[in-house]
Length: 109
Image (cartoon, rainbow, N blue to C red; front, side):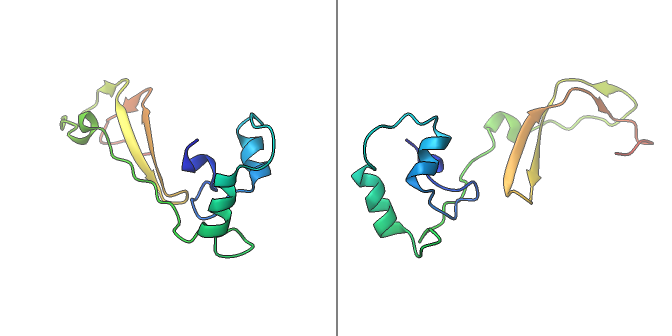
């Protein structure tokens, strides 16, 4: 089990054991594990389950995407290119492939 399966999406709060079971398709039987009790006792600050040290996303953009070659902008169409975007509201990087890009300098999004 990974830490991101035990904490809230923003990495600030430890989930309850019932939430962990529900989010992981209830694949656990028996009482709450001792290791989870240890996390609850040693790594949360209050009854609100705030983590002592919130988790941060440590990810890196693959090398093949770091040096995207510059292309001339013109009125041609580009298909199936990798792109990434930082979504500030969820503090996460979104990586995907474009379906179609219009590179006409007179157009805007």
